Amino acid sequence: MASLAVAAELSGLSKTLVENAMQGDTKEPYSLSNYNEERINKLVEDVFSKKLKVPAQPGMVRFTFIIGGGKKVREKYDPACQKNLTAALRKYNFEDDQGAALLPECAGKYKTQHDTNLNLKYVHVYPFVEAEQEENDNNNNNGEDTMSKQFICMVAERPTFERMVLSEVKCWKQKKELLQHLKEYVKRGNDITNKMINMEELNATEQNFFDVFDSDNVKDKILWLQNEMKKHVSSGTLTEEEKKFMLNQANNKLKLLNEKLQDETITTKNEKKIKAQMEQIEKRIENLNTVKGIHIPFRNEAAFCELVGLLQPHLLRKDAGKPIKANEQAEMDDLRARMDQKIEDARLWFESDEDLQVRVEKVETAYLKKKRMKKSSSQKNKNNNDGWSTVGKSKKKR
Image 1 (tube, rainbow, N blue to C red):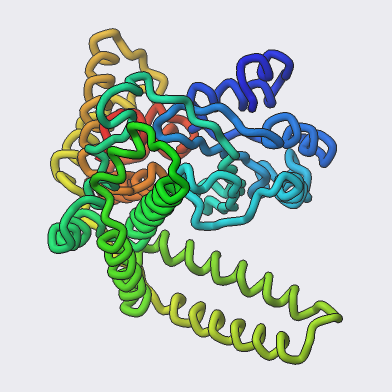
Image 2 (cartoon, rainbow, N blue to C red):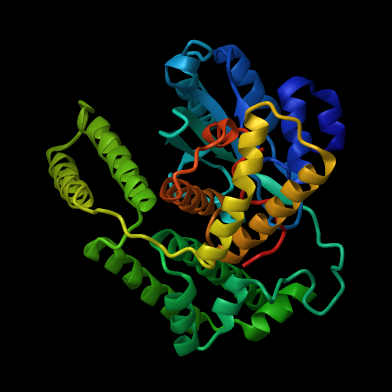
């Protein structure tokens, strides 16, 4: 397991990645400019060939690597950077999963992304991890967060569960996140049951979990949730980001099936089966292309936009090179803090930082356009946190 001792033996980016993982601080993207195949292989071996030690909550980290982009940055990156990185990861049993998220069950996954706004290409890596133990590990719940949204959904009665989902888990991707949590609970329940069958003693965490876990109830919720997710797809009630995600997922599956079709050893039976699968996926892609994308309301949008309007003149003054006095800087910091709180208040259950950031930027952009206010240079360059409100600053969870 990669720990402080291991980090001490490393240098450069490898050392930074291991140390940041232990602190749970991996939000900023890491550039792989000027990384050839040899350097990438060395980086992956140093960092991802073993489990990384991470904080107990959320029990997972995500590394985001910039591996290419548009004309302005293209020359800095090896054209084969993405191919080399993903190939190196696969050597250590990593798998491509475009639905991977910041959850412990996504360990050993990676996914690709093309940010069309910044015109940058990314590979997000979810390493194999070993989470630290909770500090208060001897209390009744022994580290179990019984106030987490997923735990509440797990123990809730079916009617209450449905009301909560319809009220707070509005999008397909949110439902997918919740679905992964519920499946993980079923796995935990099965593991505990097997221990009991084998006459093994349960620890406090396992006993407390088993006391409230109702396998049939949770499995029933999973079936209902899966059906609700299918309704999103069949009715086209998907956000623009979900549409892009599904199209990317479908095209990747189509590509993999096409590669299997080129295998000279393929049997006639398997060829027919693969062609039938490809036909279904092509129909899905055709249907997805007709989806326009739904709008998800932003909680307290008016109050948030008022703060955007108050901050904007300060940003434009700074952009123009005018001096910012201490009292003005204090006012700007206060406005940003209040905006960050409004953003967290607007977060939906199981909504990722990335998805929330997209909604924030849409609201800010629409408001500035409506008020005919210019964007500052820092707002145009979203890598600079000086202008845009940045999701993830507040520790408040929804």
